[in-house]
Length: 284
Image (cartoon, rainbow, N blue to C red):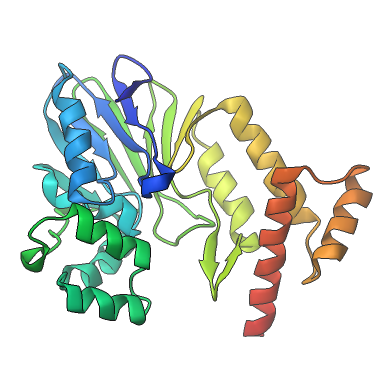
């Protein structure tokens, strides 16, 4: 069921048990825009069925926020102009060359090109997959693009991110709503979940320049401004306490600097920033 944020903005909540991220819908007087395509054709069909039950203008545009499979594998289901930034397009090229038969999928898991969960969902939710080939995007924008849906502007912008280098956000100025995709999350490398400390403040700067009151996230659905400010504060405090590859030292530093122990979220972030220090030390 679609959640209604305003008369022109809706979203389909994330389903973590199915690895389904939040999908967004912005409606103008003439056209509608979709944010992210879903993790499979079935996910996309479920979303489109919900849209069909609304009295909204036709979907003209589809924006992919970044090239992680759970955000784009449903794109073939949309009869829309697909929009990506250049790096997302580059990363999607590999997926356009993949085959989706059982043998190929097994090889991709073994070579770590796809996760086992991704392959399971492909098998269950993409019918006739042996002939499946991902479509190509239609518009590749540089840095920023503004779309007019008919008395409803949407600003697309590629931002710096702790999650991927190809993160695109969608901002709706008159509603003060911003779709962040997964941009504010950490990422995993060498089996270590980490937050890129060097990217944290630049990312926050890129996002906070937009006057937003509501934030749509890929795997939490929606946050208001107070919740987002708390999120930023916890991330910053955890980052400031972490200058070492030792978790114990980072926790001790946090406790000394803040006259308290870290809460559950802050401890999670501290561990992720420590992992970032470990990964950076391995590159040195």
